[in-house]
Length: 108
Image (spheres, rainbow, N blue to C red):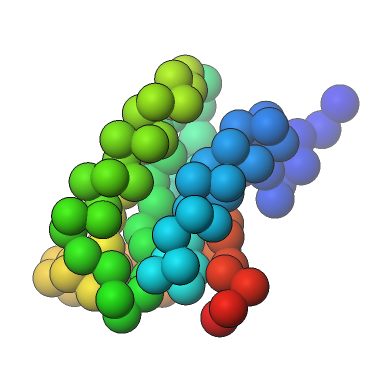
């Protein structure tokens, strides 16, 4: 059975668990998945690269979100960042080019 490219090689239940964590933070306007999962060239065990967009998001909130995601005990490592604090031009360009929306707040 072909893998749904919109699921980024992840189970729907995994995506729903991640989205549920994001939905509990009103400051998250959008979550964008990038890297191998977004490009479709991931391997078994590839991490999940996600950047969060939202003007009011802080590093303190990022730490709480990371803790909640860790508590899900997923089999994947999640590399989480705040887009507004990324200062590597190549990474910003990569996210803008291949990033795909994983979560969009109903408030956005």
